[in-house]
Amino acid sequence: MLMWLRMAPALHLIFLLIIHRVSSDYWDVNYSPTQFCALQNSTVTISCNFTYPSTGYQIMKAFWNIDLVYYDGEFADLSNNSEYSQRLQYLGDEQQNCTVRLSHVTKKDEHDYYFRFITNVTYGKLIGIPGVRLSVTDLQLESPERVTEGDSVRLTCKSSCKLTDTPTFIWYSNSHTLTNIGDKLNIRSVSRREAGHYSCGVQGQTYISPAVYLDVRYPPRNISVSISGSAVIMSGDSVTLSCSSDSNPPAEISWFKGETSVGSGRIFNISKISSDDSGEYKCRARNDHGEKYSDPVTLDVQYPPRSVSVSISGSAVIMSGDSVTLICSSDSNPPAEISWFKGETSVGSGRIFSISKISSDDSGEYKCRSRNDHGEKYSDPVTLDVQCARFVSCSPAFGVGFAVGVFVGGASATISAVLYFCLSKRKSRRSAVKESVISDTYAGLDLQSATSDLYDTLTSVHHRPAENSCSTLDPQSSSEHHNPPINRKRLQ
Image (cartoon, rainbow, N blue to C red; front, top):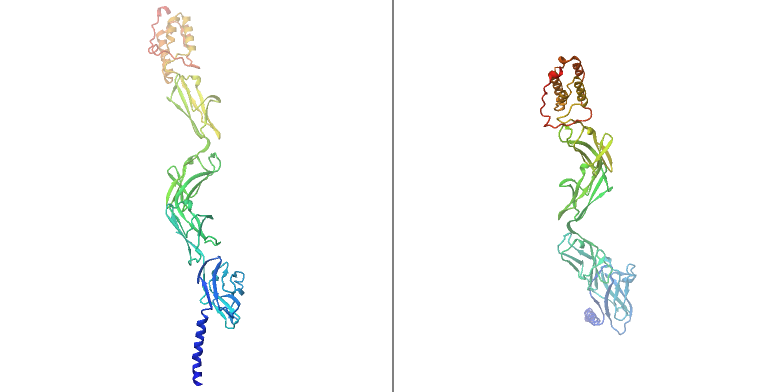
């Protein structure tokens, strides 16, 4: 009896081992697969089947549990968890199929999942250990931080675990679907047109990776200058020039007037513009990858005439018969129309005013008027003082008076010939020459000794200067003059 008691524990242990060995042939839970990697926000279907002895057993309850959590002396039923009740769907039956579906999975759903069933027999219950490990991953796009135009680029769609369901990847560029369906996107010789936001996803799933910006860098292009303000730029206006360019990274802008640097920045302002600011302007865009100049634009600053003046070409002394040219100069934009005035009378137009064979009638004040669309201005007047030519005749009044006086004395022919040869040089020597001639004439005639009446008559005649015009004599016939001999006997 004692021996039995001592052997009883050993026999009991052997019996339990036998029962467990037999039950393992009939009590079982299988999962496929036991490791599951699911995409975030996707739906997971865990395939499962179980077995139990068909004789004498009836399934009373079948459910899923996470992390072997106990509740009130029993493994907790996952369907009673508020976080799972709306997303968990049992697809199996109460015979062999224990498949379950979990929708909209997130990182919070990363647990070990177990299937549990209970039969009508007190000890006829089982939980499938080990369970299924669920991992949830998002998608991350791996891309170079920046590339240069012309480089080869590879973008990779990555997950934290290998997705269980063989995925078909889809690529998006700026919200447009691309044709590439692999987890890698290769771009050979990338261009600036391919810069933008890229993302990836899995076909049949709603989840899309966060977008990554592909930064394609390139030198400046499409450089141009625009002018703000009125189409007609007037002196005193404010003018703004704007430089636009396409480049990555953004270019540094410099401004040039001709080849001279005048400023920097995308905007160039000129306040109270003047004619000195007229000219060609251009901008230069430069970054680490190159530089480019815009086409030049011309600032044509318009203004009314100014600095109007008249110049005279030719000799400083204007002699009768000369040709004289007057030139009007002015500063204006657009170029001015030129008109000429003698006094207040219009006498011509054009920048040059010529007078050929000038005479004393042309003497006077001349001025020009410069006029354009923005105003007009007159020059200061210049005076043309026309002087007599080198050889000129004596005044008609003197000649006639002298001839008459001599005719009375009976010596008209001889004395008249003498009196009409009055020699004159330039104006500065004219009076001295004439006095010498008259004095010589009086001495040759000895008129006082001849008769006192005739002498008184001659000495009462005075020379008067020419009034309106100069009559030019032939220099050859007037180059030398001699007093003719006087027939004193005839005067007696």
